Image (cartoon, rainbow, N blue to C red):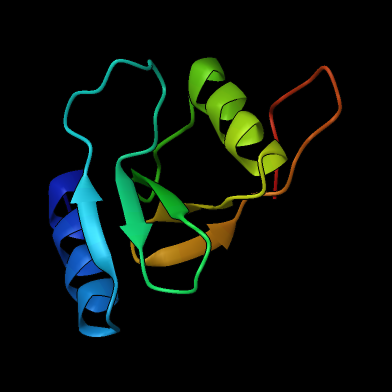
Amino acid sequence: MLESKYQKKIIDKWTSDGWLVINTIKVNMNGCPDLILLKDKEPPTFIECKTLKGKLSEIQKFRLNELTERGFNCYVSYGMELKKWKKNNEKDLSYGF
């Protein structure tokens, strides 16, 4: 399935749970996650969407680490499976979950 199809399903699910979901098609920061989720009294949440076999680029890993350091919730979706991103202090950014 295409990444855009997974994005639509994720957007629908979070919207039905009361979140405002913004799809970041093009922003001024390279590597910015695909979706920004906002909800009253909840910290901003970011989701990077990937296909089942998709891989994060180095700039995406950097950006997820940067956002996590600032206290935001970050996830990477592989299809419909969400994995919470955790700050990686290692030089090798091949993992972060």
